[in-house]
Image (cartoon, rainbow, N blue to C red):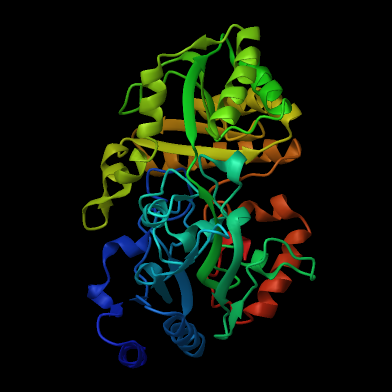
Length: 469
């Protein structure tokens, strides 16, 4: 295999392929780390090689080589995936896309940008702002995540209710199939010409094809943006108020509503407090002012207490800071690895019918108690149907047992979600972490997805094992 990889290195050119000890430890894992609840191995394994394509033609060459050599392809963006979607096997070529970061075109009149998949989201947003435009996708990982990675997980960001998921913002894309065929879909605002082919590659984590470029919707810089915070006497009161705000036809550009619980095992202070809401509207001055008038009417009706404006501004200013905890402080070791070394910290992000959220809250908290796992926070993000739960458990004397206990608690919470008619993820994808639950999530639909996978990738070259495929 070494000779074969040497041949690939010659085809690609200098400094575009690494093997053996030249592979940096970071490529063993993405941001799904050892402090998470899981039955998967903590450390991961080194891939057979890491490749840095510079063009779509390079991706074609690498994919065709991998198919001939019996190797897998694992697409890699910013390494910010939280579900192990970029975790390689020892017989894989990791395809680090970050050298494919060209902006092919920006059309201010059409409100579109065509960019390569390795473009970092924040870098793209900065380019757009020079044209008085912004990127609609604003996840916590924006300073590190790439366009291709966000498409692969169909991630959602702070403006999700107003702008939709990353996939909703994709007008057209370019992808390389397992046999090296390049598929390009038309970047049309709407089409009724049969199967929407771009959806094969949105949210499927590189298992059907490697996204190499995309045409995205972009948006004008808002004339006005205004964020405020409020607290409520209890979660049910705040949730009911939120439901009425959304039913009024308002479209917040940010909504984050969460209650917190005491968690003395954490390396940071966490205490019980009244549920807090951060709400933001963006657009013309008239729309923002009218939105706040109506929202405040609902907030006053339940005696919501305004928080100091500095808290809301600080929330917005620091919304991306957590991504820097995933930066390396030594080879293969991140700040998060050190910070969370004594706890198992995990989260569940589920989509539920609005009518089931409060019953899910009761059931989830009961599940955690049975497993000896502590809740840290429970809330909804971007819209009332999208629910987040954060949990923690001390490592204690047996780290493996603690990881398994948290993993079991998460699985049981997800079983409850499925029983309530919900979906087990709305933001981070499935990756390797939740792959074992895909049969329960999709039912017979998983068999259909696997038939599509076999048709497009009969040898299972593209990111095998992820998303249940």
